[in-house]
Image (cartoon, rainbow, N blue to C red; front, side, top):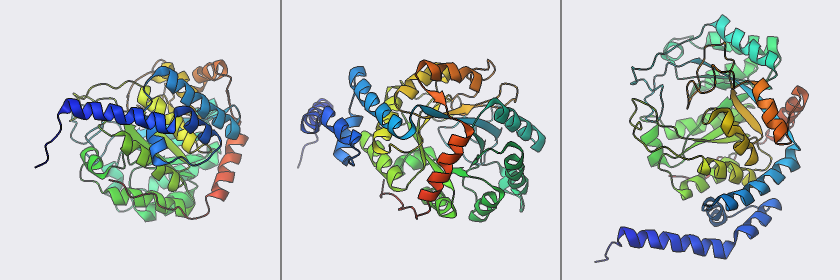
Amino acid sequence: MQRTPSKAKQNARQCANREVSQKVFGLDGILKKAEQEIPLSFKEILGLLSVNSPSELGKVALAARRLRERYFQNKVFLYGFVYFSTYCRNDCTFCLYRKSNQTYSRYRKNFEEIMAAARCLADSGVHLLDMTMGEDPLYYNKKNGFDELVQLVKELKRETRRPVMISPGVVPQKILEEFKEAGADWYACYQETHNKTLYQQLRVKQSYGERMIRKLTAKKMGYLIEEGLLTGVGESKGDIARSLLLMKNMEADQVRVMTFIPQENTPFAGWPANSQFRELLIIAVMRLIMPDRLIPASLDVDGLKGLQDRLASGANVITSLISPAAGMAGVSQSTLDIGEGNRTVEKVLPVLKANHLEAATQGEYQAWIKARQTRSAKPARGGLPCG
């Protein structure tokens, strides 16, 4: 009978394997290959994800910034966030707004309130309006429940002349078609992880396949799509590497990662807090693997104070800009920096300037979208088997 190695021996073996990976592939060699835009192997991506010192992260981030500059010069895009309903029919174990959390006060904004918040963001200079909600039963359980939201997208496009991202959860294909006809440009629907076992622990009783297929269907309809990861929830480096390759192969137009923040009155409430190191590393590795994609620096995890580090890792979109007067919440940090007005265009512009970056013009963002839509007309490949 084969003996199971002790925990100490397992840890020692893992450390030895990491050292071998660094020696065989060499961080400098991997970075040189990435800057030449030669596709990285799974093992090379694992080598990058094994970086664990600030100095090594600095090297990876520098290479990421060089690739960002190659494709986007010093331009950054700005996204306004309109979280118009915090009601949800799902019971995701990581989420503050899970249906079982009865301690959190919910809200549901009406048509006029949503339009007012969106106008305010558009006037402030955002390039895109991200219209987000939980899977609110009010919309899902009525025969024509989404009609008002479809009309909302139509009005937003007419009034603001801004691209619109819809983030309403897993809506029926027919509704996706209606949103597209109304003028929606983007569809965001994150898996959070592509490890199917972990997915079921996070998104309880939700179909992994249905969620993934809906994104790929949206891509075929002509949407630009965003895929996202949650880090710090028990995933391995191998899980992350497989996710990054899948996101590349499915031709996701925008890819993001956010650090998990434990939420009160959820099954993950006692989960240990995470540092931002892994998120910064993943942002940089995303840029090395997918140099031409949009990669957000979210204000939702660390607020304004965390923006510079995310930009330094290669991000080129600032997301979760929220009008302080709209009475709307964030996701990971529901109130962070909102009331103080720190999640506004006015407050992020000095950070861009300090990092030798600048906000793109609306025309530049529209041109990027048009070019990407033209390129994305070919069918998505569907990614890699994970789990």
